[in-house]
Image 1 (cartoon, rainbow, N blue to C red):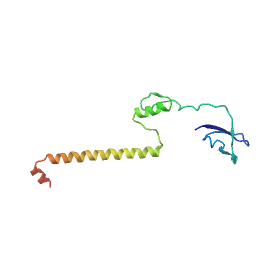
Image 2 (image 1 turned 180 degrees about the vertical axis):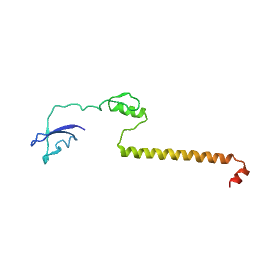
Image 3 (image 1 turned 90 degrees about the vertical axis):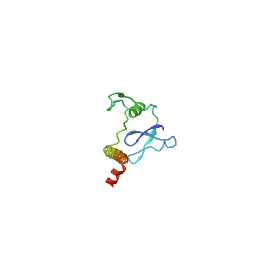
Image 4 (image 1 turned 90 degrees about the horizontal axis):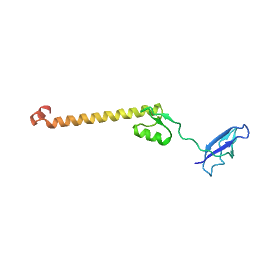
Length: 123
């Protein structure tokens, strides 16, 4: 989707906005009126700024490298504290269910390894 430049005739404020070609004249509002489309030289919008991966300390530059780093380290993007707590609760419930299932299987296995006389004693 193209990035268009807009300017406010009243205050001189400038803004950029992504619009489809059909919507290019529907600029954002400023000073109560629509900003007008301005002709400026084209430029390429930069990629994500580079950073050091908090998991393994490697330098990550750009969207592709970020996606690869997240997949390689089995991580996911930060989504805010509320979502992080929700995800932690989900992971905790998953671990508890998995542990309970293993415990149940072990108890059933142990029960079936008992002799018939021992089983009758338990019942």
